[in-house]
Length: 66
Figure: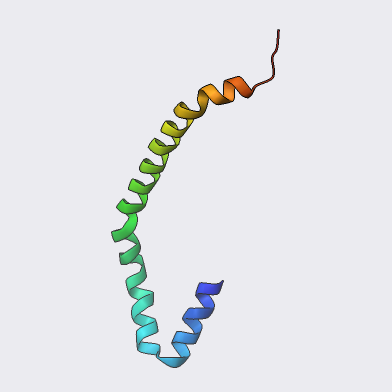
């Protein structure tokens, strides 16, 4: 919603630039898509490393059950 309001303000101030951003946005999104996928992959690997390191502490903190 905020992005749409910013675009409306840009449209009022400079409509050619606003139309250019409207046309260019999908291409920029497609260009940045591989970096987003890489970010998900790096986040997943770091999460696995974090869970592997903290596993002993979580096991020790678990309540004792028979």
